Figure 1 (cartoon, rainbow, N blue to C red):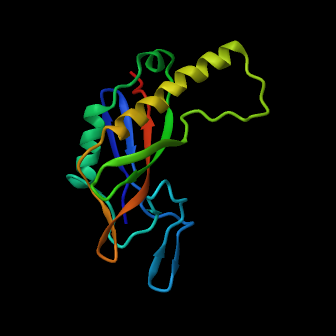
Figure 2: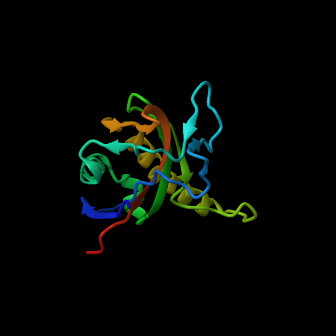
Amino acid sequence: MLQPLFQLFAGVLLVVVPKALDAQSSVKGDSLSPTLEIIGTDTIYWKTEGLPGFSGGQAGLLAYLATNIEYPAAARKIGADGQVVVQFVIDPSGQVKYAMIAKPALEVKLDVVLTKKDQKTMEVYRLLDEEALRVVRNMVGWTPGTVKGKLVHTALRLPISFGLKND
């Protein structure tokens, strides 16, 4: 079971919980069933026999995030924090593809009327989303997932928490 890692680095609280398995995944007989749409010619699996891994394991992933995340100055200025969940695919060559925000740092109900101040705040929170996405898109060094010994496209979700240390 993958355990969360917690680290405070340069005022950024990182909570890293790689998730390769999804409750929506289904297993039929002894074969694994993809649960995402086929993108182009890529069949993408949520559940694999051999899980994808980052170079250096969870400690390597945490070190990469701690070294590469830059807390946006505008977000730091207003004390913006939150958790961003980035969904992405590790392809058979170990590269990150199809990275997108699965859960933004700030979620807003669609039936709420936003003031101009609220809109500006949302723009600042989007900077956290963009930073998490940038860092994930630049990751290298993944070992791909496998199904029946074959390297496959595997979907992952990575929560990244932004938080400022109170002085």
